[in-house]
Length: 377
Image 1 (cartoon, one colour):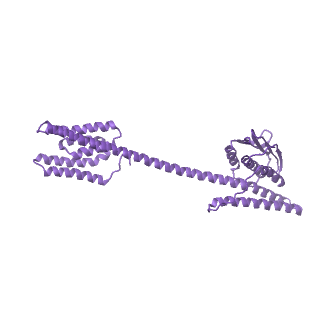
Image 2 (cartoon, one colour):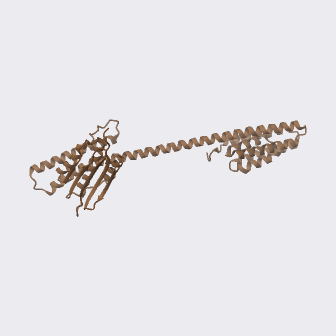
Image 3 (cartoon, one colour):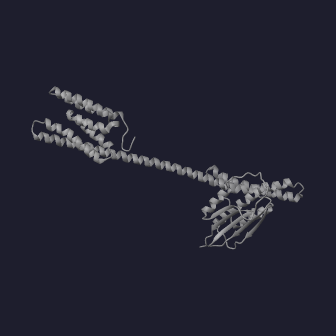
């Protein structure tokens, strides 16, 4: 549809209009009793041809055809004109006025030409009124139906478009979630591997036992990272098999992160003021915050002193602070994903908390997360 309620142009409709008008004109010629009837038949054909232009010029063309039809007195032109106006006009008042005009142009000439008395005139008026009323009613019904179908089609297209957008947003969100999960899994452990390997590289005179200990830690860390990465990639493959779920971090794993960094040679102190059991969802969020903070220290503040502070109790907030002394002139060749802090910010916000990061007044870089700690029910 070109506009609401307006039909497309179809050739069979044009042919049908010409056929109906031609049939009426032919019947008039067959029954003609004078040359006047032949003139009327020719005018009917001209008006039928004019109806083919109704699509673009219907507002002024249809009233003009009705005026000329007063001389031709064609029932086909009268009914088609009324029906066409009713299907295209979206205002009932205009359709009503046009219908009254159609009755006037169709009945008045008949009244003037009738010589058999008032009965024939009234009959012509009633017949014209019925034809116009039926044509107008059919046209309005068609217009309403077309408008309804058009609205339903638009709503279906909008729903389809909205569903496609929602699916695309879901895919993007899932890709982002998986990317963050891979970052959380790989970045911390690979930074530990790089740290240990660097220590072996710059200390060639280490004792054999120290070398073996460092190599064992590298092997264990790399194996764990590879295993967890394989599980995430198994989900990405989508081969129809359920990927085994790795154990989710607990509060003990939060403390173990600090111990692992200490074993890797990082000067990091743990200030743990948590005495109550920490719910697993809260522990997982805390684990990711501490993990990301320590990973950034491994990459960018290797030779500085760091600390991890854990404070809170049920019914208040769990406060997590991971900070380190700002390094002077230290550089690293470890690549950054540039999404770690963004990832934990999303996690903390989803948990109802807030997170800040940046330099402090005492010359440290601090990541501080405050997360609500609900009371146990």
